[in-house]
Image (tube, rainbow, N blue to C red; front, side):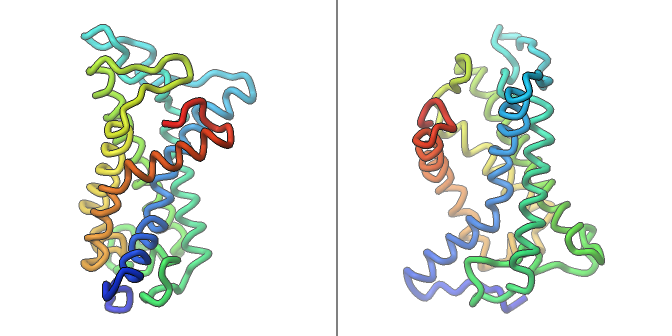
Length: 225
């Protein structure tokens, strides 16, 4: 376990540590993209509908409970994408278990044999961790949507309302909380990694903004937020 301790002896180390946690948690964050893929892009491509989580019903305040942007296909698809990406990260960087391997670290660099998610076929462990963190992202994102609609912020057609903190912090917090509760003995929450995981929570709105601008410029989003 000592081999993956993040050194912080200078600005370069700090930047490398931040990049490492971005890549570690990247699959869970990309669950949002997976949700768009399975909840909107694929259904639109084949001309089929999706199944709204709130069944199109309004809450007591007259606004939709979650809105058209939250579907069962997106929920499951987003978690599945996170799962597949975590398995891919493990396969690509298997054996990268020391700080010298940063920023491309094996997500299973720390895996206690007695943990409930430990399997002889380690890709199963990676799939489970990725799916649960991806599902946490989706649930947190749905909580953010619920709060937005209680505040009267709603989707207009394909354009989501502009609420940068509610669009980011709920899903980032949900991922971090799930890691703390379920995977605190993994590299994701190793003691020297932990401060950078918390820093990622703070940086998430800025990262989200930059990726949205990129998506807008290459035509994947209709608005840059």
